[in-house]
Length: 96
Image (cartoon, rainbow, N blue to C red; front, side, top):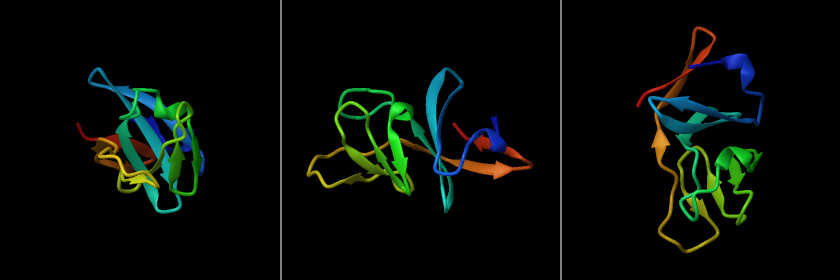
């Protein structure tokens, strides 16, 4: 869990839950969570750039929709490993 205020609007944060590194992303639609590793080379996605709902990997510029995990603009069979997340009582919770 992470205090909801610790994740800025259009922000990214890395947290660890049950030994698993998770990236949290806040968009206008809410909070999304997924493994903090790009499916291309394992680069931490929390080091990328978030604009709206589009996350750009810092290493290889692959772009993902953080709401669905879908890879954008490339024709590769890759997507983000999404994790259920929600905001409740001022905290961001992930379900592993």
